[in-house]
Length: 511
Image 1 (tube, rainbow, N blue to C red):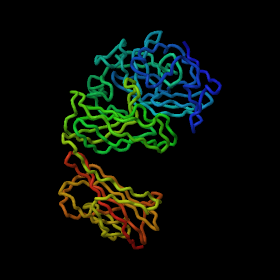
Image 2: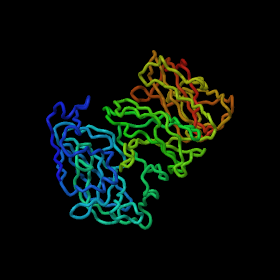
Image 3: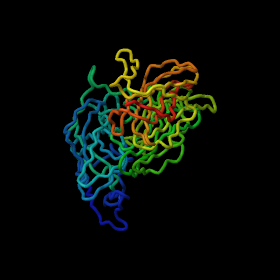
Image 4: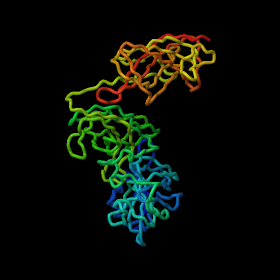
């Protein structure tokens, strides 16, 4: 059966306009089959059971590729470009999670024997008339239950197949897809005997499940949304945890479904998933305006997926990924962030103190309401002028005529003796109440140095730039303020931050 999607006249019961975009809500504005082909309903079962590949889709949205035939090894994937072009005269919204699926078929009836899903679930997007969306990141071809499987029992076996792309757009249809097209042929070759590509050892398991590598999570490049950097988290065995997860829409347009199925918290040991938890409370509204942030509260208590018991005390890595509404979707995750540190303890009521970085005003902004973090150590200005570093020793050479603008601080350390690593700084120069120059540096993996209680340490702030990003040469009177950061490992085994603040201090630079 062909699927001709016909525009209907906009009436009280017809298509509706998406607020602020002028885009037609296509799942209400087309005639078609008896249900909406939703992206989250694209599962292994629905793809492998699809029977319409051999018939024209006859859709107002078309799929094509400039990549032509595809050749890849068993369990491997290569970049392959698929474009969705909208041919009607009005813009349409492509719903969240909608991405092409590469489909391998055999025979004159185009029987589906395998598929390669997109690696990440995209966010909702609005496509202008005549415009195109391109997707280029797909996973390995997986064999359908009745298809030829490789020796690993999961991936499509070596052979030659017809190559199609198909996509669900949320429009009414009789099957799982609204548009599809034959793109060429796909040739699957045996794995190399030695060297070359080797599939991941956990490739037979769905990404994000117990025992899989966090490296298989999508990069989700090009998304408008992103999670904030993950903070270290201390959790108590068997109790919910609050990692403070936030999602921000950095794009210029509102998203109608940015939250998808909510975030999943994936805990790993030695890079492999050992626990997974979802948000314990109600999810925020799915829409997210430009520049807006959605916050997710507590997550359920962590269970070891290998045993079913509460996750044992220890130090772990964790990641957060937006999950599809349907856990069986062939593309289970969208926006992802990694690099979180998690410690689990059996000590009831355990807490940790994390010193926040002060909010420093940006260049050109007012510095009138700057609040520096309470409880931080303090620094004092001991030198201002032009200075440079000795090439061989790194020693600061002061009063060099062609040197850099420099503010040198003496940091008074009052904490317990511990090994601290340089983490960088952020400071500004203010004139007439407005920031006119700034310097910011982030340092990772610096060698630690032991600081004794009551010790003093010198830090030179250099790299000053003006509001246009050009090197700043200071002359005359200013007010300097900011902070210096050092890092250490706390008693729970988590990375922690030590902050030394520079309160607003008058400084002077000679001409």
